[in-house]
Length: 203
Image (cartoon, rainbow, N blue to C red):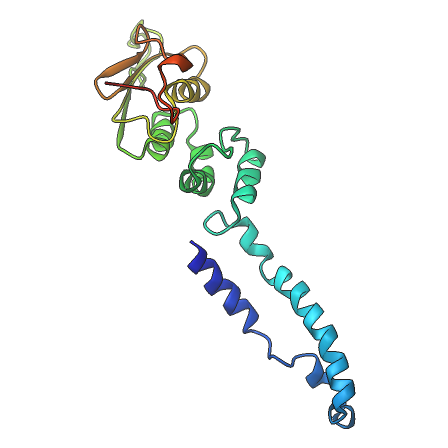
């Protein structure tokens, strides 16, 4: 990550000649060594300012932005889970995928994308929704079954809360992680059952 950022910063810096300010002096003044060195001090200060301007766009790129800026972008996009306890790489991927996640939010596809992002493994989301002819819709209210292979970046409590936040309020659901059913009627997932790293013990 830092190598990519260094390369981009280097390209921005190389767009300007090393003597970009002193070279603008009239020919007679350039030959004055004292004046040229005096102007070069202002060039050194201006170089710092211009580098900040050159790199401004990088602050909005989740691939290379500082972690604090990534969290700020996540908060601006309405993702309160992007705090300093979440894995940095997951946070960056989450922000980068935010437009796709917002586009599909509330759908099986959107939930699948989000859960695969935070767990790092394929997730299967199935529901009883669909398009039916009049009078042929099943009597059952919306029900979703979620099967994840692992908790990944979130604890069991946080994963359950994330699913609840993403699903419509009227929808019931089952949440399975590995061979364990976390919801409903699953094991209690209070903080006492989490390991020292905040991950639910699924053994």
